[in-house]
Image (cartoon, rainbow, N blue to C red; front, side, top):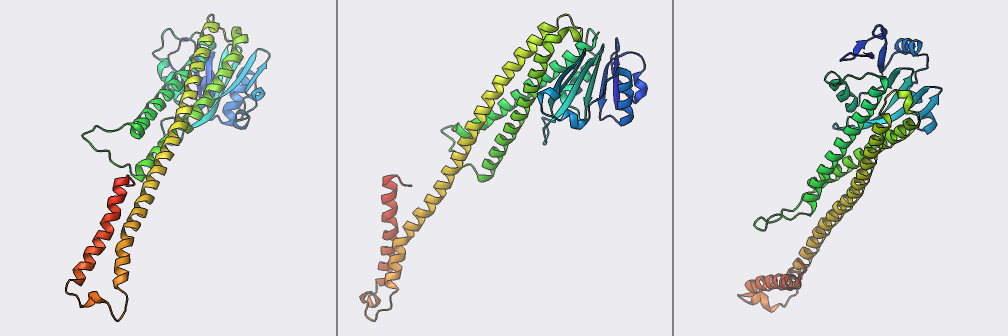
Amino acid sequence: MISAYARGSDRLATGGPEVLTGDPLWIDLLRPTLEEEAAVEALVGIDIPTLEEMQEIEVSSRLARRGDTLVMTAPILTDSSGFNPSNTAVTFIVVGHRLVTVRYHTPQAIDIFIANLARREPKPASHGEILLGLVEAVVDRMADVLERIGNELDGVSHRIFHQPQPSRPRRRTTSREMEVTLRTIGRNGDLTSKARETILGLRRMASFLQPGEGTIGVLDAHVRLRTINHDLQSLSDFADFINNKISFLLDATLGMINIQQNQIIKLFSVVAVLFLPPTLVASWYGMNFQRMPELEWAWGYPFAMVLALLAAVVPYWIFKRKGWM
């Protein structure tokens, strides 16, 4: 699908090659067909990269200058609020007075930018303003994602470490809750790593743009690019902090699980020891000797019961006094 934005317009015209009439500042290709690629290539005079070429990880493949044409590819976080977040490659091509974007998924940041385009004042007057606006929208989205991760990890930390009120006894955390905690930490760790990849790609792209800022046709491009770089640096530092917190919470959660498992094993051990003396008494009086004085004694059965009870209570008292249980 092709979307085209012309100077002075308040929205993208969407359709096939017919939307390329006029003089569009921004051409957005979403999962383009061969016919749509050919139409755009004929208009701008360059080859549109394929999905395989966009996914190459070499810096030389992602950032290239061909005369006055800039070809930049960055991984952009997609579906950050869903169950399957991923980084999708988005290519930005600056050719002449046009910006061409090529993508095969729709990151939320681009959706937000397109939705706000109609309300944007003043309207973008050049392809460079659209390019910088898209980058700034992605940076804002990364900030929102990292803030959400930080808040969710604060909740996990509170559940792990904070004691309840003295009037309310602490309830033992179940294995299901521990599993949910581990999944929450792991999901946020995965999301943070993908956000870091997006931040790294944008930093490379912003640094690549700075020497050739005149190519994008924005007077204050150097100021906006410097601000973008500062924002990305702060987001990178915050992502490092979140990574360290994730490692700490993961170790703490595994430590809590080990403590609970040790308590369960200790409980089984104590119960086994408590039942051992009564079992000894029972087995002693279960011997089949011909002469056993207690067999003829009227109080023999109560005596054996009391002896077995004392054999269980005395070890329990000793364990409790020494703090072993």
